[in-house]
Length: 314
Image (cartoon, rainbow, N blue to C red; front, top):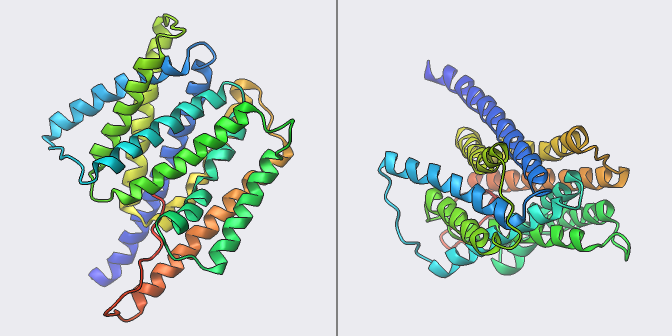
């Protein structure tokens, strides 16, 4: 009986995992739209301060309710470096969306897995073959198509978006190196880092928020945290290679919501570049899935020469 029910249960788990990934990405998209709306009135520092304060209250309550114990990270230097990367990437994101259409910024950030694959080969000394190199190169072509860098298009906001996406890639790399650190500790560090940055930067240009805006500023952190919960649960229900490609629906929501809320019309080259980037990202996921299957099917080696390329999960 179990032999007949297990595949059905597996398909059901994957289906629910996909639904949770789609919901999580939708929540992230709503969070991004709210953030773009709010930074038109409030400084990036103020947005990060109130957003992080609300998230910290909920996170602290959850830790207390579950009776969870937090341990000092085994690699404190790398842990602090991760906090720096996470703070810089979110600050760059909010700063960039002040001036650029949401779809343009999200296209930059969706290229992060391409950067991860390239950086991991150099920093982590991970094995990389010609096929992966080719896919990474195609992904960079997508970035060039989307941004069409020139003296006119490579403006300061675009540069900030690129720096933010690079910091996001470095965030994923450091997260990979901190596998032994609990997810709660990682989220807590990110929240505290953004809170400290906001506390330092918010006094410059502080604007007293209205009641409605105060609620929206507080909801930023809560919506993002709920999105993370959905994504993390999705990755527990289904393999990353099954649910990860659905993260690229983010660019679809960015185009749709950017048009409906802000009247932004995505340029053709941005859409083409985003499609190339998404295709390269999905190709890397497929390559990784096949590589892991091959390693799992091969007989164990007494002296392994390296480790498989890990997935870029946060």
